[in-house]
Length: 148
Image (cartoon, rainbow, N blue to C red; front, side, top):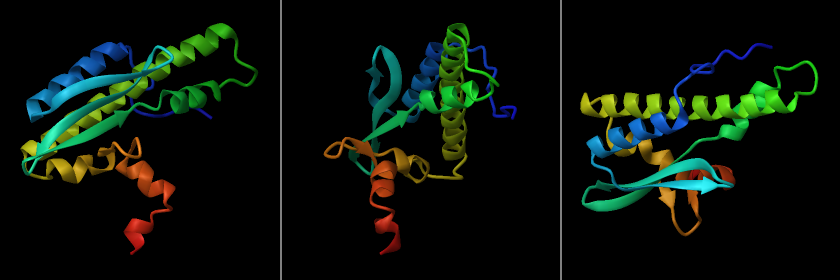
């Protein structure tokens, strides 16, 4: 099976995509942008945005491991260490480039009044008490809040 996803061959370094994401978020009015790391690898960008005079936290996670697993699944045989490292590096570039393009498209939709900020970023509202996003807490509850 061949991987056929957008940006799966991106050569744009992850830090450049992250910088572009930050610029777009700042342009939209984001405050308090920070990056979350795990084991020395960037795993999320968090920021706060004023929505109806309330500062709401958001978190955009990059699921690099999922993309890496997809890339490694392309090998017929067990991947070598070089292939594993290459897959990891490509997964980082791909994940952050996808997020950068998504944020850019969403900001365009907002600017063109096709959507409101919270309408498109709602799944990424960060619930500080649960230390998770709104979407993940919905999923963990088996989407009960949507069914009531």
